[in-house]
Length: 265
Image 1 (cartoon, rainbow, N blue to C red):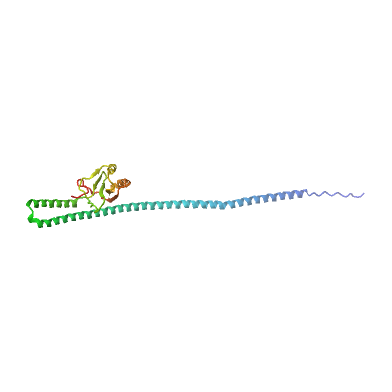
Image 2 (image 1 turned 45 degrees about the vertical axis):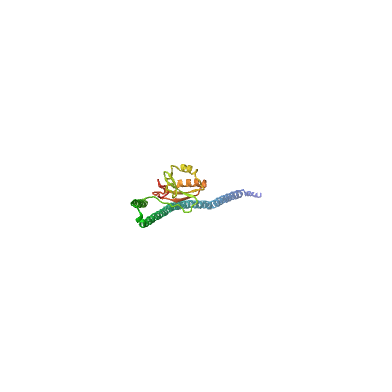
C-alpha cells in the first residue's frame, strides 16, 4: 500500500500585517509628536522677539520719563533764575529812576538858590547906589529882608523839599498832586497858598469832579509806596479827560509845603 503524502501546513500573513500596522502607528505617532514640537518651537520663536521688543519699549519709556523729569528741573531752574533777574532789573530801574529824580531835584534847588542869591546881589548893588538916600528905617528894613532871605536859603539847603518851577507859557494851570501813603495833597504850581488835602483817593476824585479840565492839568508825584494809588488815580483822571503827567519823588522828600503849597515865598 502506498504511503500517503502528508498535507502541508497553511501559510498566514496576518502576523506580518500586525507588525506592519504597529510600526506604521509608531511612525505616525512620532511624526505627530515632531509636528507638535515644531509648532511649539515656531510659537516660542515668534513670541521671543515680541517680548524683547516690549522690554526695549519699556526701557525707552523709563528713559524718556527720566529725561523729561530732568528737563522740567532744568526749566524750573531757568524760570527761577529769570524771575530773580527780572526782579533785580525792576529794582535797579526803580533805583535809577529815584536817583535821576533826586538829581533833578538838587538841580532845581540849586537853580532856586542861585536865583535868590542873584536877587540879593542885585539888591546890594542897588543899596550901595542908593545908600545916601536911605533913611535909617529903610536900611533896617532892607537888613531884615536880607536876613529873612538868608534864613530861607539856609532852610532850603537843609530841607527835604523839592521845588518844581512853573512852566513858562503854559496855557493851563499845572497842579502838583503828591501821593503820600496816608494822604493826598494838591497845590497849584508856583502859587503861594495852603494846599488841598485829602485823606483818601475817593475824596480827591470827588474834589476833581468840580475842577475844569480846560484850565488845569495834574502832575502826579509818585513815591515807592504809592504806586497802586498812582495807577488808580491816573486812570480816573484820564477817564475824566484831564491831561495827566507824573514824576518820581523819594519817600523822604516832599514837594508841597503845608503853608505855602507848591510856591516859594
